[in-house]
Image 1: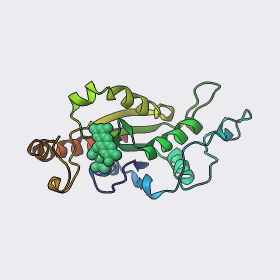
Image 2: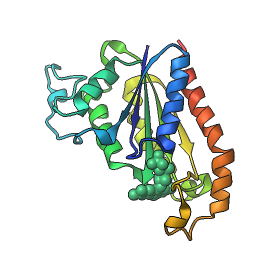
Image 3: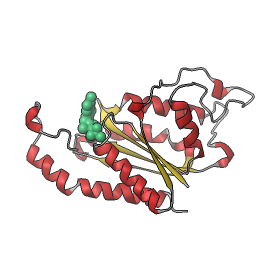
Length: 214
Ligand SMILES: Cc1cc2nc3c(=O)[nH]c(=O)nc-3n(C[C@H](O)[C@H](O)[C@H](O)COP(=O)(O)O)c2cc1C
């Protein structure tokens, strides 16, 4: 078994990456091999509309023809048993790099002839971890749930069990005093980080564990 995690944050050791590492630990506990990929290490673009994956003879299905650093990653995902995607919310959506990744993944698994799905009927389990500054109630009033659903929905072509997780009120700076911080209640954020974030990590671990249960 193999589980691959895609970190859509530019930061390699912060909340998003830590959640993904926990999910991978859960997968490892089920005997899976694991791989963590940082999207910002890769040189790649979003979909360029070449339509190779949509060719009428089906010869381009399930493979993205765009030759860049993402191409072999997408090929490995198609062979995997689970995919964990993590992204911070940036300006009300996932990061640009995450979005470019999702365009490529969703299109090569899609078809204008109707629903497709992974090659050989593979069922790739999938989880999406969203991290954000706002609290859950602020995410709700800002209309984020529709955005979560839309991005998460792009994993539906993987045909496996799926879930998404919201990690809110994240700790953003090592030292808040070094940055403009008036809109934050730092004591509240610190307490949340100490009390809630370990629970978020545990939830991510359990998601990884459960999605790899075979
Ligand atoms: C460019 C930028 C835009 C952001 N926009 C939002 C936003 O719209 N809503 C929000 O809740 N947090 C926003 N944030 C905060 C991040 O989502 C949050 O700090 C996240 O946990 C960062 O993940 P990381 O620590 O793994 O890098 C933004 C941060 C940056 C750098």
